[in-house]
Image 1: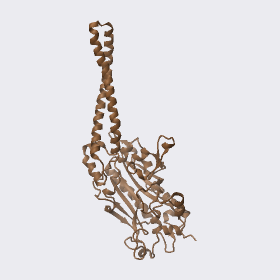
Image 2: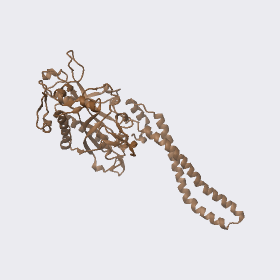
Image 3: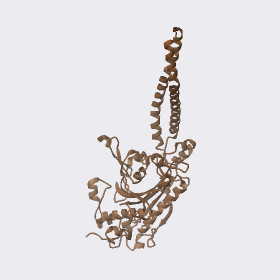
Image 4: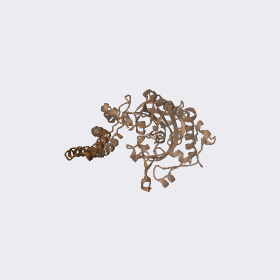
Length: 468
């Protein structure tokens, strides 16, 4: 949620930010609702103040007049009764006025809040302007010395690559047919060493973040109330991507939703809390199962492990002080963790600065990390894919957007409460990461070499051999 005071002071910043993100917001209606809401609140405050004043002043006066009335002569009774009637009528009128204003506020406030929740976080000033992912800018790229992504796979490795779908079948790692039989398209079964490899990279990533990067591991719910989804900015804009559990139809007082990232649970931990300034930054990492409906992705990567409904992810989150320089420093540190991990696995990658049109509602800045996948891309004249980068990670700076929605604050040095800043970044998501891992480490004989850091979690195995 944006800072409404900042909007009132500089609405053009938010109007420009929404346009840069290609998001249409009815700002005229928002301003009208905001003006009406403020006016009603001011009237309510005034009327309630009058009620308090009258209750203090009129009570004793009414008591005095009633005492006088008992001993009053007939000539004076009419005057006293008139004043009594006037004094007794004023609270009733004020009560009716307050009731009317409360009804108006009850209509205006939800509409105001609903519209305010749709206003996106403006992009940071240095984010490049663009329409969509095609306008993202490469920041840097890395490849192991023995592999050149600008040349065909065979020129580096001496043989034509197999795609991950062929590899997982020949190695007996994934059963797509039975996954679809049980759950429909975009589902799969990890089998044997496929499941172990999946768990190995997740465990390696979690241990890496905890032992080498100092993040605190947390296990958080993946089934959450709507407030958590709204608070983290995934609702209302991303509602169509979430699986909805209609618990209210089964007697519960609230529905539940399956989360698409561990970020939701990690950020929800401190909703409605005031943290001690010295306890910041909070550095959390979680391993969770994630669920996404992939609404709007019909026809996109329908085969294989790239775009699926259920996966597991190691996610890192930082909650820090409301300081842009500190936030940017943590952004760089979180990306450094990912680069260290990918380099340890010998996986070529590149970092892309996302342009304004490719930022989400909640992001003020975002860097995507894409791994090289030899089995992707257009086919050459012989029908062999030429390889392409595919997104595997995303690192975001959110400013105070999430924390404001979650009411997550800390006490500043002056003793005042301040909304914290938040950042998040994928450490690794599997089984998508298995695509570059298998394709990059395949051998001419059809086997796959297991990267050294994963072998301890694979029973010491160095290779995965084709099944007989």
